[in-house]
Structure formats: C-alpha cells, structure tokens
Length: 287
Image (cartoon, rainbow, N blue to C red; front, side, top):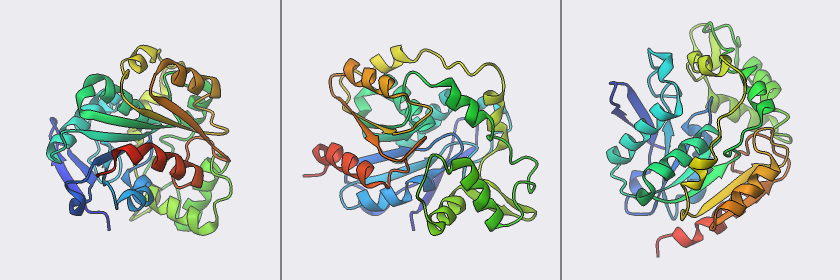
C-alpha cells in the first residue's frame, strides 16, 4: 500500500497525498496528476522509483480523497499550486523533483517559475505553453458528465466500458486487466452506482468560453536553469510535436521524448517512458 496523508489548506479543506515514509531521506519526487485523475495514476511509477527516491503524489482538491471545494470558482491552477506549496511544507520537503501530467504539468511550470530554488528538476507529461484547442474541445466533451451522482455507470463493467470509450484512442493495446485497474483507480463506488472520482464542478471553467488557451511562453521561459524532461504521446491532441521542439530549443537543459502508441497522456508505465525517466533521474539518485 501507498500510505495516505492529509493536511488542511488555507480554506480548511482536507488535501490528501500519498507518501513513502520509509524513504524519508532519499531525494523526493512529487507527482501531480491531470484534470480528472488522482494520485493513483502514479502508483506503478512510485513502485518503480521507490528504491532510489521518496515518491509522493497529490490528490488535487476536488479529486480522489481530497475534499470537494464548495466554491467551484476555486478550481483553477492558482489554487492548486497554493495547496501544493502547503504540501511541501507538510511533508518537510525543502526541495523536490516534479512530475506533472497535463494539468499537473502546468502546475509544475508555475511552481518552477515561483519557487525555482526548491525545484531540482521537472518531468512534464504531454503539456506545454501552447495547448491545441482540438484537445481542449475533446476534454470539454466528457468532463463533468458524471453528474448527477449515480447516473454514470450501474456497475464496474459498464464503468470500464465507458472509460475505454473515453480513453481508448489515447491508450491502444491495454488488456482487460489493465482497463479494469485504470477504471478502479479513477472511479469510486457509491450507493447508486459508479462515478468518476472527481467533483463534476471542475468542469465549470472548461465549459465556459472558447477553447483558446492563454500564452504560457513567458511562464515557460521562467524555468530557465531547471533540468526538464518532456514526454509526449505520439498522437497527442494537446501537445503538438513542433511545440515540444520549440520548448526544447528555448531551454538549455531540456530534452523531449515521444512515447509510441500513446495519445494524451502517456501512463508513464510504458517502456519508452520509464527508460527516459530513469535516464533523466540518474543524476539525482542518492549517492
């Protein structure tokens, strides 16, 4: 098991995160998940890296075991980063390596620009300072569709089928056992059925306005000096290959790797992803 810890944020919400207390003293890695995901996204990666690192993963507010926010306007990266900074203090982390998938990658970029002296390195999974509007439109089509509670799936078989319908193009080749685990990590059973394990209100910001992402290149440039690894799914509809190339060209210590047969976003258990992560992290392993 990957023990769960909690603290209260500035608004009094309980924020949950997973930790490896037996690895205190080893270099720390903090994993930050995507929009509709949770800390269990990184359970296999934590097992893989646990011999050399202390791996933590956060349930961003409104997801997993963290509290739902009564004010949906607080569901934005600024609030999430505020919680993450409190997590660093709660876990006693003076410096950390960040691994951020999608939304978690944006959070990692913000943190790298804000507290550069505490960020040793960043691995960004399938996101960048330019986001393809087509991918945002796709995400908008399914986020929040679990409301009202209990109407999403009657049982785990139906939930797995729905998860495959949403994510199958991005994750070809998963067998039934892998799809079952994927579904059970990202959904929760209630008295009335199975629903995705996030507050449907996180969709409010996605559903309003045009799918035109802001210009994040100034934020990206603020990461100068931080070692960065970018992972991109080969058929991602969020991170275009030319954007990843420009990201690497604009930062001195940055490398991009394309993960075959993956869309948005790689699971980070693929052999190509693990090989790239292991090579990148070799310089940070405890001596």
